[in-house]
Image (cartoon, rainbow, N blue to C red):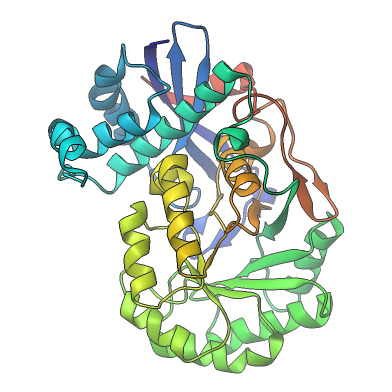
Length: 389
């Protein structure tokens, strides 16, 4: 089996004004993705997702061009089943033969940013191809079924004081047993964030897990103040309390509270997570497979987390392709204990593929179809594509 084509498309789905939310990133008017397709001479087409930005924003033209002009030509004619070899080739570039001989990396200069995102999208698509070729779900290829169903938390929570409790209760009514809300600079101050978190706990009671996410927007002192004032709320985790560039500051926050610290949605490769873990700055690792290196690197990150007694909750704020990749990872991987289920209005999650991800008792079942188990709705792809290559 050989690769015959590698395609990348920028999909941009509009959000109706009455369904848009506002966060520290701005107004959520669109949801973007880079859809990656790897086609083979056996007729299999693998699907992947690459992200140019965390969240819904970003311009994807450069990412599409990178995949089309730099990555695709070097993959035509290769066996798509050689997933590790292709990952190492893309990461090490012209020195990949040295990496193979010496057993260590010789990375390209552009080994982070959209280069790693591009690798991520291609890698996910290759796993989809492999599963389809073998007639097996990807979780089977990642080590088999460790769990039948995976807990999924509702990711949303932007409403102000007086509305946040109702908003989160709506997620619980949809079947979630855990919910996440945003805090940080989008609020009027630390006390406002604390008040919103307190309203959430009073509304939901003690049985529902509540996570808070500051999107890396607070200073160390602000984050510590929030953790101290919210100590009695029994929060499941405090996500990205400070900038991802301030690992030592995050370690200070973690050392000052017993609320678990979650982070990593902006990190790339196992090396980024190695540094987070070495600094004792994290309890819950959150690699995004569409950013951090695909399923190949996500497995390595999960193993690293497990070796340090940490858990993993993949960042899955994206399309149905990304959610499917995270679901397969979670089904097969002991250290992955929960999934992110986006509750912001997202047509790329709900309308892009024929299948739907259903909650049962707060969990999502392991999919049985080959590969990632998702089928593109080509009419939706055509309608939402703004750039392809």
